[in-house]
Length: 231
Length: 231
Image 1: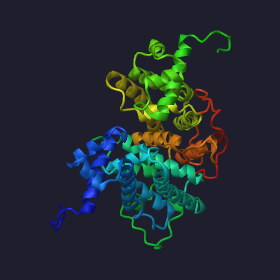
Image 2: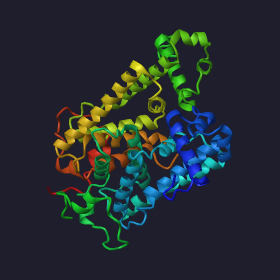
Image 3: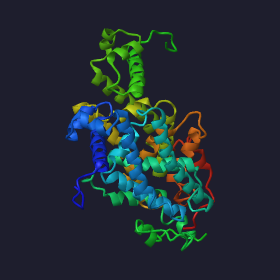
Image 4: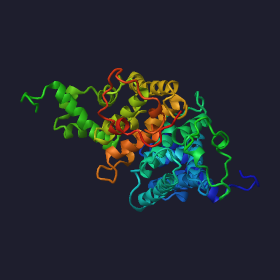
């Protein structure tokens, strides 16, 4: 069903298949999920499923690409033009945590768990898309190092993978009904890696340049914290 | 073979079986590894293997327990009596990174990947052992918060899982022949979470108390860094 009342078109049908298949594969693993089960969960015959999907590995590839599309749209696109590298990283961290905690994480989990399942060109293609994110983070950390915007100087690759490890681990322990809200987790992690009282105070972001959309970082934007240094 | 020339005893044989099984399960997954293949890799008959191992799930449980033993022996034991909480966390981080990068990580990987494979009491038991580590980290972060030894105040649970995510992710990207050495990764991650120029300088660890073995943290112990604050 669409807002206009049209019947779901092919693209929407395809997307719904990917969603359903991703849910099953996420729960049972790729090896543990049969095309028959995916077809049944989609309320289709197996023949009907093969009308949309070439084979199981192509389905996995499509799910991972869909996951990377969602990731780029929801995490990268909103932050990539933020001028200040530390602000860019803070906002990126919040967006990525939101993606992981908002129930949109099943494609992310599949990308992580089944990274060795794909073969050949499909695997290389997904690897390239993943590497683009690592490079984005490395570039931001390198820029922050150059501008003296971080507390110490840390190898950008180590920093990028630390950032990723913190965030991607969240799906392992976050409980939607647990003590910690998504917001508290994001606040804590941002504070841990990019303390608001640290260099951010003594070396403010170039004001006005590119007018970064700060809607996601109320704390960092509003509180200068008690730890400003005279330097 | 043992240093004394004795024939390997039952305990050593058992340990060798766990090592071999862990290697196979790590490569192929629990579901993808048969007892027949484990027996063959151990140069035993399947009947011979069942002399040592009750069944496949018990084998998995034994591997995870062995992994937790190694972890507690190599990571927790050397650091748990370090008096200063930040020093304790720094050393713990280095020890744990070493465990992950030194090729001792297959049991850790199995504990992470197959966490949902165990059932009933076995699963609860492993979960309790894992939770002890989380609690150890939470306590250290809480203590560091109380003593003002961290840059900002971060929820100890968020901090503990951030610490864990950073470290446990290392096995995904570390390459023994890559640009970054284990030491550089450890230096970077310690600097990222516990900057040597931060509060550590203004609030030194209580000297002499408990005589913490500092052999693993040459940087933190020797460099005060340029960022000491007057506060």
